[in-house]
Image (cartoon, rainbow, N blue to C red; front, side, top):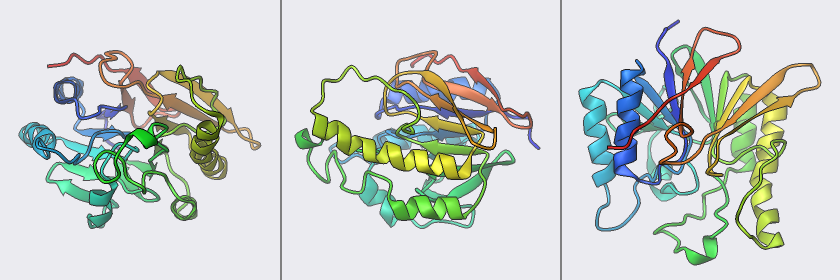
Amino acid sequence: MSKRPISIFGDWHSHVGWALGSIDAAFKAGSRTLIHVGDFGLDFPGKNRGRYEKKLNMVLVEREMMLIVSPGNHDNHDTISKLEVQDDGLAHFRSNIKVLPRGDRTIVEGLTIGGLGGAYSVDQKYRTEGKDYWSAEEPTQQEADRLVAGGRVDILTTHDVPASVPMKSDLKLPADVIARAEKTRILLDEVVRALRPPQVFAGHWHQRCIHEIEHENGSVTRVDVLANELYNMGNGVLVWPGVTPLRIEPLKITTR
């Protein structure tokens, strides 16, 4: 098994300088594979469409690194749905930027990584479908069932956070919006209870926290919620394969 750490990141929201700084930090730490847990900002329409990914891909190619995106709600799901999934379980968006589709899995540094990204946009009424909001933004029961049917994973990447993890938002949201968003959290919780993965990484809430979910058989799932861009000690972590439980360390990031 490889001794290289995997770098895992929370939301970037198309922030080029922060994304490049994150790649810099991962490279210096010895990572060659980066995993992003959504709201990467993949293929957003507009006059600058594609520039963000082009800049990142150039650096990734130069450094022989690979970035895997497990999509959030602020990623272009129309584009993602048209990508062909390869034998490695990943859909290829750029030469060195790939997507882990919801319900699928891949192997990174000897670890099986499952994906069930996406979330409900609580500000949906202020967004325009096909421009900065996509109706397919949430994971489905079918995708969840497919992931569970595939069996054990070492790491589960989600975007929203399983319902068993107590989260507090500073947003003042109507009760109906909160209830609507909670549907994804409940679905994720059901998947965690079924798969009992040792480790979950999520984002979406723009805060850094760690919580453990205990299962009836005595096993524990550690959930790391990662902060968003510009949180230099909360947006990224290093994960070291070959150790049980996984060794997880903060990754300090400096924006370019």
